[in-house]
Amino acid sequence: MTAEPTLCAIVPPYVLDRLAEDGHAPAARSLALDAAHRTARLTAVPRQAPADRLERVISDAGHRERLPGRTVRREADGPVPDQSVNHAYDGLGATWTLFSAVYGRHSIDDQGLRLDATVHYGRDYDNAFWDGHRMVFGDGDGEVFGDFTACVDVIGHELAHGVTQFTAGLEYHNQPGALNESVSDVFGSLVKQYALHQDAADADWLIGAGLLAPGVQGVALRSMKAPGTAYDDPRLGKDPQPAHMRDYVQTGRDNGGVHINSGIPNHAFYLLADALGGPAWERAGRIWYDALTGRRLPADADFTAFARATVAAARARYPEPEVADTVTASWAKVGISPT
Ligand SMILES: [Zn+2]
Image (cartoon, rainbow, N blue to C red):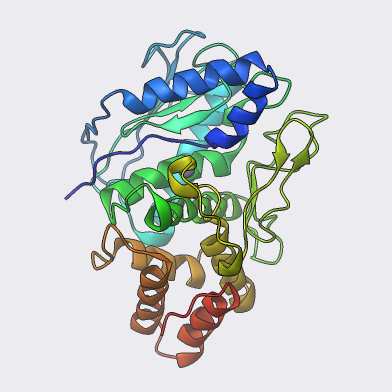
C-alpha cells in the first residue's frame, strides 16, 4: 500500500506569502508555481533498480519550468563543473546511505527506487520539493534564499517525505500532516548528522542552515532544539513554530499548520536524542523509524497516537525500561501524554 504522494515544498507557503505581499517578485512567482505543482496530478512511478545499489540521475531544467530536463550526471559519473548538480548528487547519496546503513532500507520505497533530481528549476525559484517521484530544486532568488541544493538536510527532508509516502502514509493536514513534516525534519537532520559524524550534543538541529541569503536575520528555516527561534526578519516575519502543545496553532493555512505545529514533535525528538546522548540516528532515530514503518500507525494518527507508537517501538527494541521511559518523558515535556 502506498499513500497518495503529496507535494511538499521545503519553504512553507506563509513565508512566501509574506514576501509576496511585500512585493518580492520571485516569491510571488514561486507561490504561483507551487500552487500549480499542487494541483497537477502527482503520480508515484517506482522504477526498479537492483536492491542495495544506489542509483542516481541528476537533470538540469536550465531555468525552465519543465521536468525532468537534460540529464547531466548519472550514477558513478565523476563531479561536473556545476556545483548544484554535485550537491544534489551528494545529498541524494547521503540520504540513501543513512537509510541503508542504519535502518537497512533499500532506497526510499525499500525496493531500490532510483533517486532522480532536477536542479536549476525555473528562474529565481524560491523552493525545493519532492513531487512523488523526483526531487526538484530552485536556485533561490539570491536575495532571501540561496541555492536549495546547498543543504543536505533539506534533501534528506524531501526524500523522507517519500519514505512516509511508502510507509505510514500520514495524511497531509492538521496533526498527521504536522507529523509528516516533523518526520521529514527528523530524518533530514539525521542525514546531516550521520554525514558529519555528529553526536546529538554536537548537532545544530537546524533545518536549512545556510539557505537564507546573507543579510536575512535568521539562521535557518526551523530549529528542532529551539522551535520558534530560526528567524526573525522584517521581510520573513518571525519563525511561528511552537515547542509545546499549549502553544499549538489552530489555523486553516498551511494545510492546518503542518509546517508550524511540526515544532512540537520535532522538539520531542530533540529532547529524546539529547537525553539518550550519542548519535541521534541510533536509538532515537531507530525508535522513530520503527514507529513510522511499523505498519500499525494509522494514516490519520495524531500526536498522541504517534507518541504511543514510539513508546511501543522503544519497548519492542530496547528491553531496558529506561529507554521507553525516556521516550515518554520527552513527549511529556512538550505536553503530550502517550499513556
Ligand atoms: Zn516537508
